[in-house]
Image (tube, rainbow over all chains, first blue to last red; front, top):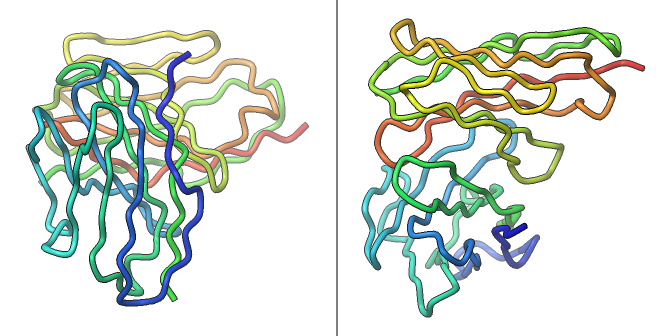
Length: 113
Length: 110
């Protein structure tokens, strides 16, 4: 069964460093998302991406964040200068068509020291 | 702004019992509602999706209902098993994004 994959599973970085989180969505899906979950808190939306552009973003998704679909399969989230409060589990999700079931990857645990 | 609440926050029941998890949302203008399972430190596994035009969906021992006008959904788990122990999340889709509740942590005791 097709699934969303994410790499790495765990990333440790120093404050101020850039990180890139990678996702491979399900191959025929058209809508892509990043969410994050700070330990003990709700899963919260970061950004949605469709037709090679951002379709919606949250207040969290400021100038330090960017997303890209560099080729036909990968979807990346870049954090330019990490802060301690960026420590969280980051989930990628994909959706076949609008207002359909979203499928989530296993997540990348980001630890900022 | 959409708010999603799940009650109870935690539930512990003996194996074999039927149980109900509750989810409420403040804005009834939704396209669908999705129930997920999350094991500790893991990703989200989609269990059921209910479109706004539907009243319920079933998958195996799971049955989810949706009352959009009152802003409520329930997840019914029949004949619970220890393997059902996990956190259950509901999420509503009003625009493209999902808005999540905080989850119900379920423990099934053998």
